[in-house]
Image (tube, rainbow, N blue to C red; front, side):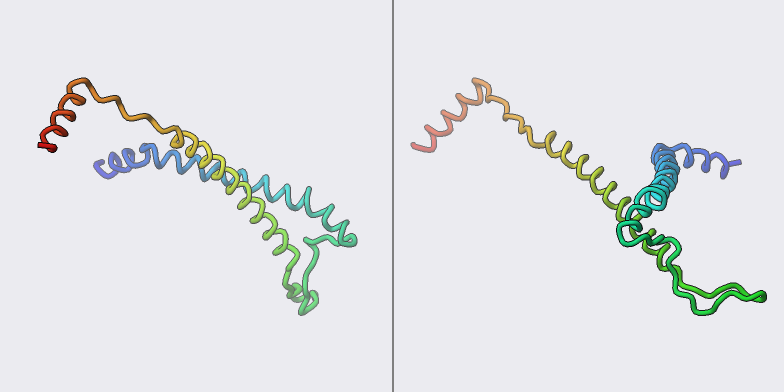
Length: 133
């Protein structure tokens, strides 16, 4: 029972829950990005470069037979994955950049040091007079 209680305490910590939410949202965002790349960006890009469907691009080393499937390198799918990565990286960069900009604005407002009290001013004057002799 002690192990279960320790596990429960670990699983209910804020960092673990936040990480779980981030992973779930990240997976959903990944699906959105994949759909955006394959269904929205690649068809017009393929049209611009001459009607090429990038997902169908491949180098075939051995054609399919009744006994075995084709052996090929699907470089078109690799191109789609690279474009997906660039989109995710750009979105992440813009998000972090925005967060940093907000953080800099908070830090940029310098607070003025508090004004010394009358006693501190008087003691500073006495110290300066004593230094002079």
